Length: 165
Image 1 (cartoon, one colour):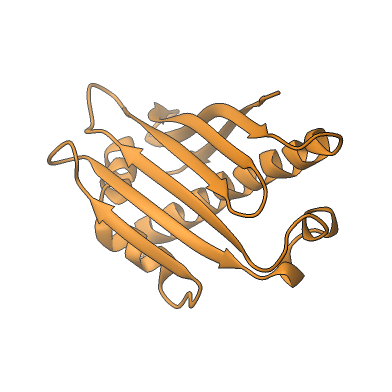
Image 2 (spheres, rainbow, N blue to C red; image 1 turned 45 degrees about the horizontal axis):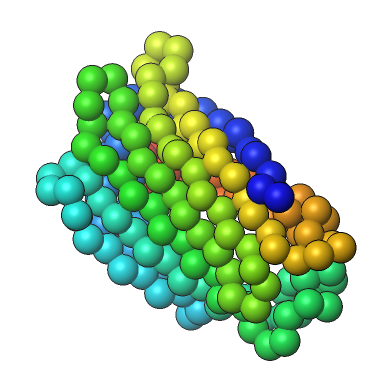
C-alpha cells in the first residue's frame, strides 16, 4: 500500500533564481562533485528552461539502517530522476521518481517551485512511497518517506548554497 507524503522547503531566493539553478547542469554536477559512488546523466528533453537529471548512488550495507541491512545482500543502488519544466507564470512544475535495488521500494512525486513571501520560494513535493514487502513493508515505507524528506532538505541546502555563492 502506498504511503503518501507532502513536503515543503523554503528558500530566501527568488523563484526565477531557484528554477534557473534547478535547470542548470553545473548545479547538479556540483552537487555530486567528489562523490566516488554516484553517477549523473543530464539532458533537456523539453527544450530551454527544462532539465532531466538521473542520479544513481551506491550505498554500502554498513551505511544502511539495520532493518534495511537485514533485507539486502551487498550494496544498494539508489536511483533518482528529477525532471523540471520551464518557468511558466509564477512558478514551475516537475517530478521526482526514485527507487532502490535490493528491495522493492519506489517513490514518485510532483514537484513545484512557487513564490513565497516577499522574494522567497517554496519547494513543494507531494507524492507516494511504495514498498512491496510483506510484514515489514510499513516500517520500510516510513524509512523511505524519511529518506525522501532528507532528499528535499538536502536539495534546499544545496540550492541555498549555490544561490549565495
